[in-house]
Length: 284
Image (tube, rainbow, N blue to C red):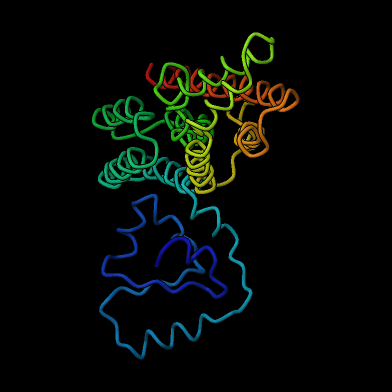
């Protein structure tokens, strides 16, 4: 069963699969299977047993505490780290290695380039001591929200300064500046707007970032620069810039668009700066 189907289920979920439940629970993406309300049947099973199990699970409108969180990447990450800590305190060294391997694959899939150094160090520690410390786990948990949000911004990185898409923003910024200072022609600005309506392309990348952010799940205590509200401000900026092509350029519109372009560039620069700083911190 897909996570989205489980999250929106109006009955108690019943899942079937060929693997053992405990084997699946070594992997972060199956965190929701840890909930006792989620039924799991290992194939093969008689059809009548499956039908009875499904019928018995029907509780319209039933809400399972914690289910929605464990279908998000952040919820699964935190759950898996807690399980890694628990496995470290048990007598089963192989479980610890299996969980770490699953964590590394999960991190590479969702946050490539962010956790490799920490997880490699953790693998070396486990090889030496067959354990992890609470400090090791906290280092991974402590910046998880920022990493998840900044990675969700990845589709927008091409619009930052020095990148090909970013140069298109800079061209409009220059044209608007000249017009607003009275040294540029408004018809020249209109031609540039008509020739390269890059905001439509950026709108697509912004939608991709918003979609990635929704998959992350709830975040806690993130700094202002990593705030998801930044995407809302970027969308408002795009609306102001788009008005140049929809309503035609006027002095009021060019001033508004000029301010919007400046804000847009500032936000993109902030995102790039914070990504660089956090990557450096996690690589130490």
